[in-house]
Image (cartoon, rainbow, N blue to C red; front, top):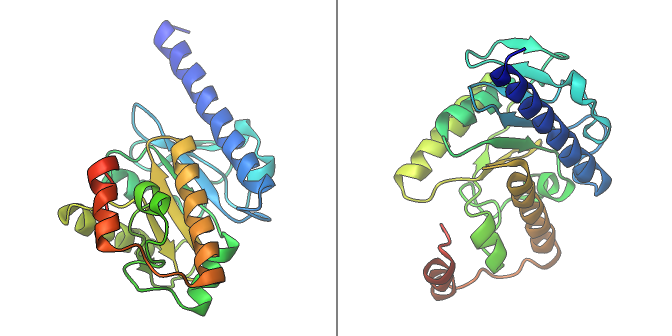
Length: 226
C-alpha cells in the first residue's frame, strides 16, 4: 500500500468515526429517534460517505457506512440511505457544503403540522443566534421519503437564495424534518440544534421577530447572512 493510499484510508476512517460520533450525540439528546435520519460527509477526492438506510444513528458501525463515488455509485458498505440523491444534489449545488444532516426533529416536524411562519421562513428571526448561525429556512412541500423530486426542489432553492445574496444552510421537508449542511459535521450539527431549539421556542411563545434594525446590526457586527 503506497503513502497516498494509506493517507486516504486514514482520512476515511476519521470521517467514519466523526459521522458515528455525531450520530451518537444527536441520538442521545433526542434530535433523532429509531432509524430516522441520515448523515453524510463529502470526500476530498469526490463522492461522500453516508449512513445506511434504516440505520439507527445512535448505534452506527463505521465499517458499514456506505461509500459513494463521484459518479453517485455506491462502492462499499450497507445499502445507502434512501435520501442519497438529495445529499448528492446538495453537494453539487453548494461547493461549501461538506456535511449534510437530515433528521426528524420533533418540534420542527410539529411546526409543519401546526403551521409554519411562512413558506420562505418556517420560523421568524426571533433570536440573534438563529439569524447568525442558521438564516432563512424555506419549507419544501411534502413528497414521500426518498422522492428524487425533493432533491431538485432543494437544489433550486439553493441556487435562488445564492443569487439573492443569502445562501442557505437548511431547508425543512414538510412532515419529515430538516436538512442542514455546513463545512464539517460539527458545524452542521450546530445548525441543526439551533434550528430545532428555535422551533421549540417559537411553538412555546409565538414571539415576535427581531426588528430590521436589530437584524442589520447583526449583519454589520457579525456578518449575519440574513
